[in-house]
Length: 145
Image (tube, rainbow, N blue to C red; front, side):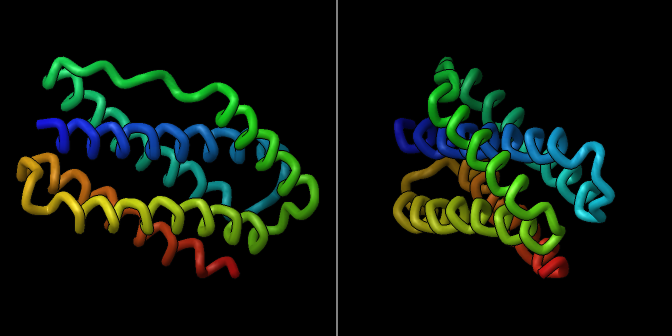
């Protein structure tokens, strides 16, 4: 039970951070001609789905997900703004998104390996689906490099 909550909370936090980052990218690219914008929007929708799914399961377990760390969120937004200001090419944005996705992939693979025998099957499936989503997104963004 505790492992399920830890895994769901990680998915929730990671998906929320990813959604926030994609939202910020959309804002910064709004008046630009970047081809990557449609993929950023699709990635945000994917993150939103996992955020909602994990939050629903956390509520079912009577667990309330903690609000996102405001300082981390602000730092992320500032970092994204700085990077886009420096280079807003599709390749540079794709590289930044891939780096963020890869951090999530590494952590999720570690958690799945560590908890595979202890986790509820439904929770484990959502975690595996989230990992698959992140890996597919990396492949999509590689086309911009």
